[in-house]
Image (cartoon, rainbow, N blue to C red; front, side, top):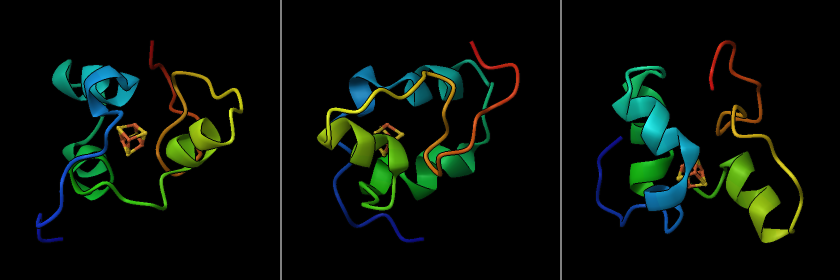
Length: 68
Ligand code: SF4
């Protein structure tokens, strides 16, 4: 995906940033969601609705194994 858009506003505080920087998640997660402000991100959608979502929930809504 070509990165022509601004990053997600939550990226500086999102656990996905830390997991990526610590090498715990694949680059494709931040590339496909965070860096292009992908509206399909489930974390973002739940945040917008004020719904609880655990830190280890990936942008597609699946729970990442051994993420802390
Ligand atoms: S995981 Fe979702 S909410 Fe978090 S920075 Fe990426 S796009 Fe934004």
